[in-house]
Length: 237
Image 1 (cartoon, rainbow, N blue to C red):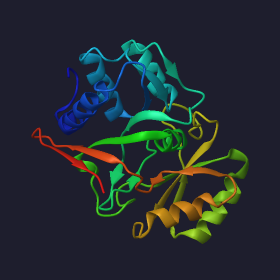
Image 2 (tube, rainbow, N blue to C red; image 1 turned 45 degrees about the vertical axis):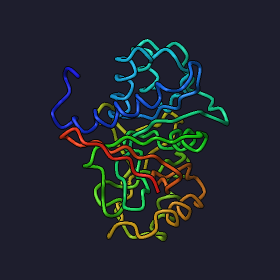
Image 3 (cartoon, rainbow, N blue to C red; image 1 turned 180 degrees about the vertical axis):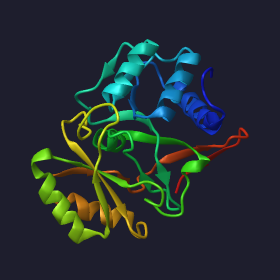
């Protein structure tokens, strides 16, 4: 993979394994595709084995859609997710011991959650640096919020969990990050990590104005972990 750094070695291992799995699906199958650098490596691998134009893709972001088009995929849907997807491939920012995920560093958490839940098979590709003892130990929890409800949501979050709250801003433009759905992202860094990810996810989503959180409680994921030395593990509860 020309241009990739040495630190990407584990990502390439997991991405190649995911591409091998997806390549065994029949032409015309529906493939959900997440967002981020590891997902792009997966798409690079599909291109390398001449499988990139075999499938119908459900993309979770404009960034992924543009990358698919650049690689030569001709059947890409960005706006409407079907109720059933054959297989989805996505990355994660953190994976805890119970195989819960923290996602949303790229701001596509809502669409990624919908695509994964719509998929019969859910493949998560990471390198071993993403394995943590508890979620939010390294990254904040992304929360997608309607702009109109921003102040209300922040006030309610303060009563739900003790932590630092920041409105995510962009290095490429002035002001807050705007998601592909036209919303804001709040980054919540809890003090002391998360004891019960599923419970916290549910509690935050009950706040009016919250579209989704970056907490993805375990839901049958096959987590492919790649290592820099070429090793590979597949984790599944």
